[in-house]
Image 1 (cartoon, helix red, strand yellow):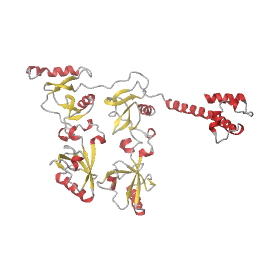
Image 2 (tube, helix red, strand yellow; image 1 turned 180 degrees about the horizontal axis):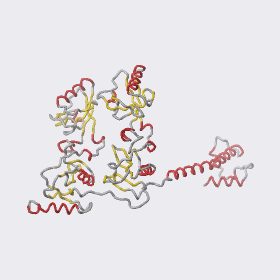
Image 3 (tube, one colour; image 1 turned 90 degrees about the vertical axis):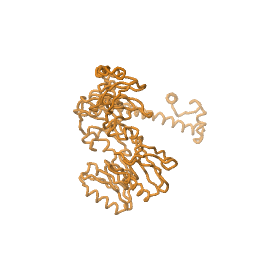
Image 4 (cartoon, helix red, strand yellow; image 1 turned 180 degrees about the vertical axis):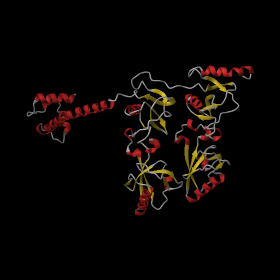
Amino acid sequence: LAQVCPSMSLLLPVLGAAAAATAWPSCITRDSDVRTPTPLYTDVRPFIHHPDKFRYREVTYYTTGPIGMYLRDSPSELGEVVENVQEGSQAWFAGVRAGWMITAINGKPFRSGERLQDVVRDFDQAKSKTASMVVQFDVRSYMDCANSDCTRSDRFPTDFVEACADACSQVPSCEWWVFGMQDRDNTCWLRSQGNGFVSSPGVVVGPRSCVPSPVGGSGEAFPECTVLNGDLRAGEPLVTDVRSFIDHPDEVRHRVVDFTSSGYVGMVLREEPHDLGEVVSDVVPGSQAASAAVRPGWIITEVDGKPFRSGERLLDVVADFGKAKADSPTLTVKFDVRTSLDCKDADCTRSDKFPASSTAVCASACAATESCAWWSLGMEEEDSMCWLRTSGSRLKFQEGSVSGSRGCAPPQGWRWSLLGLAVIAGVAVYFRQPVYQRLSRLTKVLSTKGGVKASEPSKVLELGKLMEWGLEDEDPEESDKLLEKRRR
């Protein structure tokens, strides 16, 4: 439009203001794009939500054959970039593609500042020590971000136009957002200014002010009172003891790892322990701990069956490790692997969040907690989490999240109602037991008085009616009642 009639470019701010005054989704312009000479580069990592299983991939190579990867001279901040793959090589058969980034070799992570020679040396050392080596790749950043650098990119992948609009509203210099397809991926572009419009089928565009709003509840009772796509994790936190709201099975909460006493364990422990145990602050690359996938934040609760004692310090735990290594060829370490993920700063006695399986659990926790005014349920690191808040003042749009006020909760007696139903069912089963016991006794009587052997129960069933069974010592009226209950 600006090219056809240059004077029309003066109307762009007016058009933008008109679009801004329109509510979502009427403010969206479809089948159009914004032409801008200067893309807006910013850190888009907070807007990318790839689970690890999609973002990373591990490939095992045999050290005897050619690997077949050509690496770029200048690495990315995240790792060494694969420039090309030799056809017919191990990398080619493993499906490695140009643009993948090497982030770790045999558990040794890429260090920022490394150069090509350093990575080649890491490969040579790994090949000389073992018959195979495991290389971890970041397979998404090359496709997701400009120049494979998500810390400075004008685009990021997202499946929702709402998430694209919300991202623009959070970046100070963003004036326009564009949502469309790139290489078969739904992609969001951030623009610093509008310098004209061009036709672009399938693409939608909107100004900074064109953002969705959370959908308010349509009723007063739960769950109609919840705010759909409303998120409060950036709100005012309510720090409280959330331990009573967490219910992990032991196999989920804990993990046991066996280390050989002769090898290097490779865990760096925090100087100040946690109330539950000693905290792993780092893992040495190439060590036993790295091979066992031990992660920073895990808490050591036992060493060879000896539990952590509150008040122990780093030297005490080191002494426990030394004694265990001296006593046996292996030592078994039990970790709490959930607390660091479940609670803020791995302290569930003072946390504003906890894992919750449903909105009912999250809402009930807020209703049972003093000073909790709002609650919010959403995803964090592939876990469904509940956040407790002192107000709802910073409610914003987040696809899939659900929020509600303190009063928006299931009736407080809902759990007791379920318990009552279970008790009633148990009582009903208990009082039916005598009926079945009497019927069982009748069958035994038949097997002796009716001339049928106990080893031939099928003949008992063939006799049919009670009058044919010849039960002279039973009350016929009572037997009829029993049979009527049996039929029911």
